[in-house]
Amino acid sequence: MAEGGGIAEATGANGSGGEPESSDSMRTFGAFVQALREHAGLSRQELGNHVGFSKHTVASIELGRRMPDVDFVERAESVLGETGALRKAFRHLTRKQGLAAWFRRWASMEGTAISLCTYECRLVPGLLQTEAYARTLFEHRLPLLSDEEVDAQLAARFERQRLLADRPHTAFSFILEEHLFRRLAGGAEGARELINYVLGAAQRRNVEVQILPLSSGLHAGMDGPMRLLETTENHWFAYSEGQETGQLIADPKAVSVLQRRYAKLRSQALTPEDSRGLLQRLRGEL
Image (cartoon, rainbow, N blue to C red):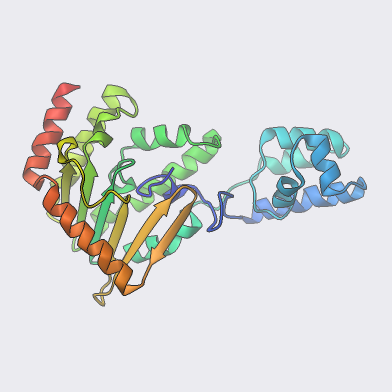
């Protein structure tokens, strides 16, 4: 998932795939695995065969690029001598807390932007998520995250949410599809809490929330989510996100296309006042 506005904001994945961004503890653990494997006289393929993982997975773990799971640790222990070293090292493993690697540059630019525009049709953007909503997304993410990983991702998510309070001179614009609030992630109570949170954020003078109603039919955002930002030097950049990938767009022609689409979406969405009314009605239906 993304969040993009969604989960990629805090999944710790690298730019070319879904493996987590490495950390010192992951590299140290990988070195333990490699040393024990070589001491046992096994190749990566042979160890993989013994523990039920591919040689590529073994390589990724040894290089500190992949977070091992409990099954790998337990099976590797039994194959590599039952020293207990892997179990002990595993308890100290941490991902590098923070944002997905491909999202990191965009996030750093957000911190100084004077304008931020977000259109979302998949899930409520991270800047507007409640803890319950975000936790539901993380707990249902595939591959599954551990409780510790979920907590780390939540911490990263809400550290970034401080943007709304810390950047009072930044203009935030959100265009959100109505169905995002009808999905009831977290049940009716979670949906009410989410709507209340978005309505509260929209009361900030620098935050504008517009809802694209189900009745709008075809619109300018049919190609998917988009984000735009304006720097203090008045340069515009865009960001596009898919499954396990993200792209920072700097080409002026491509950015201009997305700006025109976003401007059209603004005209097709409900006004901020009417959007508040729609959210209030949806809340009353729950």
